Length: 152
Image 1 (cartoon, rainbow, N blue to C red):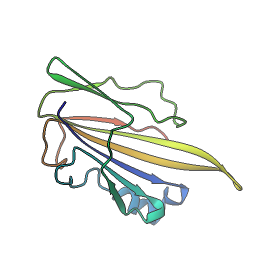
Image 2: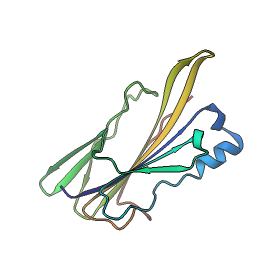
Image 3: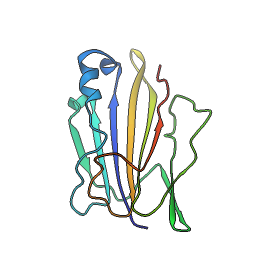
C-alpha cells in the first residue's frame, strides 16, 4: 500500500475559545511541509506551547482504517474514545484512486476532573492522506470531509 499521511492535531482549553488566543489557534495551518522520505508525519500544536508545532514521525497511523481493494483505497477516520460530541451520523469511507488525496477534519471535546471540577479540552484533527506519492499537501485535496460538531 503506497500511502503518505500527515495528521495535524490542535489542542486547547477554554482559555483559547475566544479573543486573541483563539486568533492564534485559528491561524494553525491544516498542512505543513513533509519531511524528506517520511510516509507518516504528525504535527501536534497545543495551547500550552503557544500553538508552536511539534513534529514527529510515528511508526503507525492510529485511529484510521485503510482498506485497499479493486484499485482503490477506502479511508475512514475512527472516533477518539471518550470524546464528545456524540455523533448520530458518520460519513462513509472515502475511496481514493491512485494519485488522489483526502483532507478529513474532525473535532472533539474531552473532559477531565481537576480540583476545580470538570476541565474541558478541545481538539481539531486534520488528516491529510494521499494514495500514492505526493510532494506536499498544499492546495485543494481531491476529496474533503468536514466532520466538525458543536463543542459546547
